[in-house]
Image 1 (tube, rainbow, N blue to C red):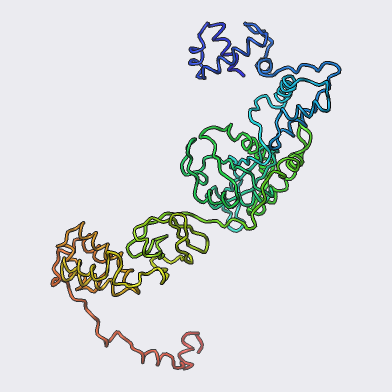
Image 2 (image 1 turned 120 degrees about the vertical axis):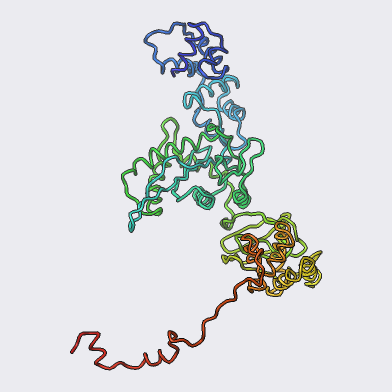
Length: 525
């Protein structure tokens, strides 16, 4: 590492303080302190030997030499110790006690622990975390994408690569999806847990929008759908810190391996569908999980079977059904608007804020965690889904709003406004469904003034367009300044005219044509 040599040069050759050296190199002061302390303990002197490379310098400062075991003191199998330590509840002290039972003349606990740390550092010099079996599952997307070609049109579309890795065994899962959006994110999680055959205690995602709606180390806000998914499977979501890749080092490594060993070898292949791409990925994924470790015995699969699989919680009896969550406020007509369609709730919840759960087929409405209504999900905009049980017992007593009160309010502005309000209430299957339009007229009166609203109502009466949208358009365009008498009457065309053929014309045309007429069209003499 060039940085180590620069730190040593500024400290021992330039004579800078730790603070100034750190500021000059743009690194924390603690880093300078650590490098200098390691340099002093290594036995090296400044200036460094010309033949000492950066790699050799790093190894001298960061790799501990393993002290050879004295004769007569057998060393334990450190790889087996490391594997056992991943099991829940197993500590290094317990493993040492079992070691001393087998080897009464073995090492003391302090020597046992020190030699284990020395061995561990030779496996991974920067290893800082040890993961309990079945506890943590890390998830992320790869940085690389794969091009898929539409066989019919030749259009190229990028597929995203979802990657997951278990903390204790490194057992890896990968698949391709079209997007990183919430539906694909949840669907990948469902297939991932079925691939592992169980559920971990914690899911560790990055702070992407599909997982976290508000990123915070102390109080992150998990996406409502993702949180419901976690509740369904009996697990919890623990996002990483923002811009802290070491919090998810397992999946970062897994992503790198997937990119190098799954995606890179497939770069020359031409895929035309997600299914085709996922089949190729699954084949290479099996090889990856069955490949022996370089420095440890076994494979990802064998380690998974021995450690993670027994510790995973069982899958629930049913798959999670994807659902989106919204919030809505109940209007005075005891309906909420969701995707431009209105769904009813019990009238006692007027003006309350409710949670809405949307699945592919249902719209569920919850208040304070309790389901208060359920409707078949409708795609039609502007329609109403009303449960008769949600209506008040009498339409004439609906809290403080009643049809008569609305009409009385309209008449207080003017006769024409009262007539429009009555028309809106009368031309709905239920009067409450006209409440929204009446409230719209109330807002127009506040915005444009009662005088203009009455003038617009008069014009709407004259034209026969007695709707909220019509009055809003009249006021917005200033047409209310034109008296109703000035409106030009609609001209109706006469029922009979030379250019109107009438039904008799078509009856004559339906008669069979003679051969002479046909010969003119086909060119026959």
